[in-house]
Image: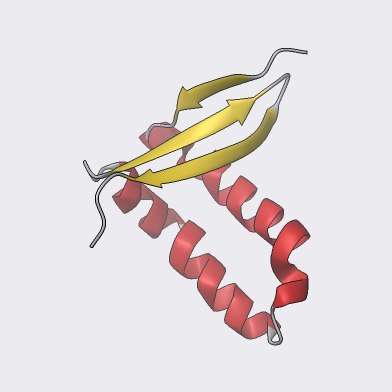
Length: 81
């Protein structure tokens, strides 16, 4: 199996939305006391409008890791105060 990493584009917002919600819930839900607070966080990070804006910002890049199917993602903020 070969792993490839590519930069995500605006057309990947649906995939990033799905991966963001599913991967985060699977790995970090135990760290939240309130499910509603976690839901608010997820909406603030992975909702369609937020992703679409982020994918168009010059200081942010999103990457997708794929084997035979998408397996993960990364968000890089190149400059942050």
